[in-house]
Image 1 (cartoon, chains in turn purple, red):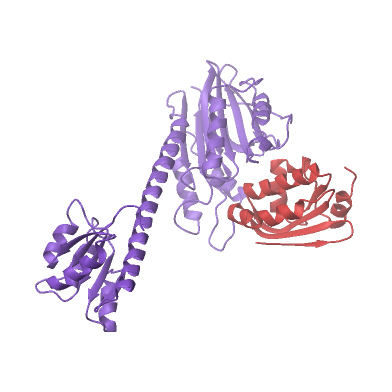
Image 2 (tube, rainbow over the protein chains, first blue to last red; image 1 turned 30 degrees about the vertical axis):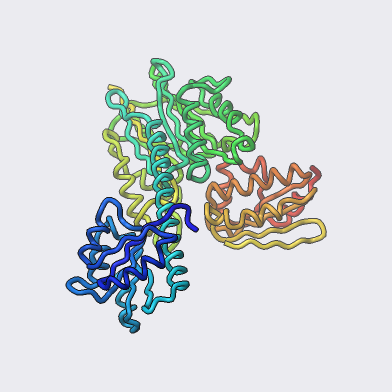
Length: 385
Length: 115
C-alpha cells in the first residue's frame, strides 16, 4: 500500500452512500465526507485539500459537474483527481464528466474490488505526478542558479576609451559558449571567446572552467599577452581525453594600447572581424584568424598568432558559430559567407551593432523560438582621439 | 541521417549522410563507435553526402579516430566534392588527426598506410 495514508473526499447527498464508501475506504485512506457540492468545495479549497475526490453527480443545488467545473477552474484545486460516482451509466454522462476533467467514472452499485483498484491507481498516479513536478521544479531551480553563475562570469560592458557590447543567448538553459576581456596590465587588454562542442550542463561546466582559467590567468606556462602561448597552455590544460571527450574552439586577442596593435590567434574558430580605418567614413572589414587546431585535440600542439597594426577607428567583432549557423526557410543553413556579407553592410563604426546583428539573424531563421546553437557576439570599439 | 557500412577484405567503408549535428550524432554515435572499434582496422568514412557538420559531429569523428588509432588502426575521411563539409573540417585542423581526401581511391590507399 502507499507509504502514508492519502486522504479522499467522498461527496454524496445520500448519507447511506457516504457510510458505505467510508466503510470501504477507511482501512487504507483518511476519509472525509461532504453531503453537498458547496461543502465539498469548502474542503477542497481548505489548507488541507484531499488527494482525490469521489464525486456524486446527481445532487440538489449544485451537481457534481458544476463542482468539478469549479475545481478545475482554479489553480489550487485543478490537479486533484476527481472520480465521478453515480448511478448514471449513459455514455454521454461519462463523456461530459471526462471532458470536464474527471479522471475516471465509477457506477453504482459499486463493486468494491474494482472501485478500490481504480482509486489506488489514480492516487498512485497523482502522487507520482506531484513528485515529478517537485523534482522538475528543483532541477529547474538548480539549472537557473547555474545559468546565473555563468552569466556572472561574463564581463560588464565597458564605456569610454574602449566600448564593449555583447549578446549571449544559450540555445538551452545552459550553453557551451563563454567570453570575456580583462586588462592583463595597464597596456594590454585580453579579449577572448570560446565555444565548447555541444551545449547543456557538460559543455557549460567546461566553458566556465576555461573562462575562469583565462580570467584568473591561472594557466601554467602561459604569457597572457601572447595569444599563441595562451592557446598552447589552455590546449594542454583541457585535453579532450581528460574532459569527457569535449573540445572547444577559441579566439584570443590582445590589444596593446602602447603601440596600438592587436595580436590574435584562433583555434578552429570562425574569423573575428575588424572594421578599421583612419576615417570613420572610409573603413574596411578584415577577417582575423590564424587557422590552428581546436583546443583539446592533441597534446603539445603549437599555435600561430598574427599581429595587426590598428588605425584610428577600429571595431572588433568576435562571435561563436551559433551566430550564423541558422536554418533558413527551405532547410539550408546560413553560411559564413552570407554572415560576412551582413557584417560588410554594418559600416557605421561609431556605434555598435550587436542588436542589429541579432535582429538580422533572427529574421533569417526559418522558425521562431530559440536558436539551434548558442549565440555569443562580442563587439569592441577601439577609437583613438 | 543514415549510417551504413560495407566490409571489403582490407577496408571497412562507412557512409554517413544527412545532418551530422547534435541530436543526429547522438543517434548514430553508438553504431559508429561500434563500427570503429576493431583491432588494427582500416576505415574509410564517406561524409561526402553530409549536409551539415556541427561540432558534435566533429567530436564523433575525432573520438572514434583516436580510439581506432589506439587499437592500431587508421581512419581516413572521404569528402568528395562536398566543399562546405571540407571547409568545416579544415577550420578545426582535424586533418592532422584524420587525413581527409576528395578522391576515393586516394582515401582507400591512405587508410592502408602502416601505422
